[in-house]
Image (cartoon, rainbow, N blue to C red; front, top):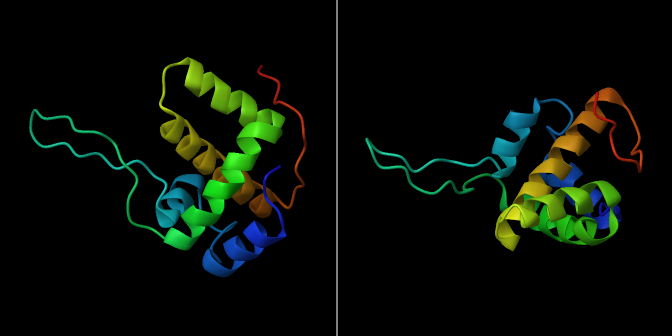
Length: 120
C-alpha cells in the first residue's frame, strides 16, 4: 500500500487524532488541505501550508511508493497526470487521499482492500 512500519509509527506518534476526526479536518491538521490565496477579484494559486511537517514528510514517501505500486493510488495518480496536473500536485493529492483512506480505516476498524472501488 505504501504505508509500512516506519510511516505508520510516525503517523501514530505525530497525528494521534487519526481516526477520530473527519477527512477534511485531519487533512487540514496534517497541512494537506489546499488553502486559497484570493483577495477581491484576484484568484491566486491554491497551496498547502501549516500543519505538521513530520506527517507530510512521512506521507510524501508513502505516496511516492504507492503511486508506483498500489493499484488504487497508481490509477488516481495517472488520471491526474493525464489531466495535465504537475507531478508534485498529483503526488500531494495522493498524499491527501492516503491520509483520508487511513483515517476512514481507523475510524471504521477496517483493513486495506487491494481492489478498485466499483462505481454505482
